[in-house]
Image (tube, rainbow, N blue to C red; front, side):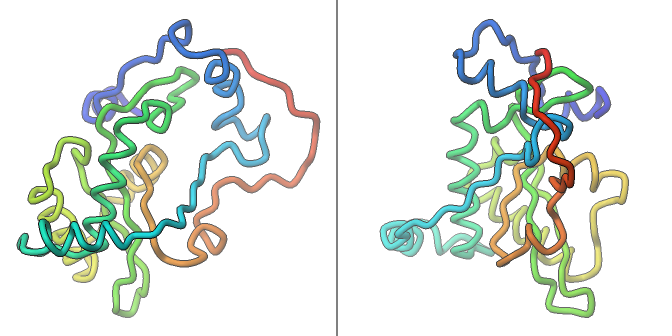
Amino acid sequence: MDVELLTKFKAVPVDATKLGHYVQWALQYFHDYTQCTNPELSITLSLDITDLRKDYDQNFSATIGASFTAYLSWRIVQAVKEIPEFNFRDVDGRWYELKNPPAYFPISTQNEERLGDFYVENSFNLDWEEFCREYRKGIEETRAGISPKVGEIATWWSNALFIGNLPHLISRFLNRSVRTDRSELTPRAL
């Protein structure tokens, strides 16, 4: 990742001496395919969203371009920004905390391509109305065939907050964590 993106994502070097023992130990394994079969953190949530739906209907649904999916995504972004470790990225062998990563969304395009994707930049700093506007704009542009630049896809996707609700998406074509050998795993230096 170049300096421009480190600045854009508000990357701050991680001081390992200020981290808890477990986090220091765990960082040796994340993002190192030679050390870990699957060094990516992937979380699937199964939640009762009844109260969230009520909150959306009562307080957020009137916003122009609002959708319940956008609301859930915005809430996830708000929660993730409170957990620094979810925003750590290994950039050229050095750990950074991204204080403002883009949020990446794969979507169904409802056209010939079937699947598309878009980013919401500055995701941690957007209020609900701003997030909703950018989210809706991303959907509309993607369905109109306007996609992120090819160069941005690899760099942004690998550093973005990935939020997807398409079933089996990871196992079908986006899993970057394929390793066939089972050699002994050893930690790498921080």
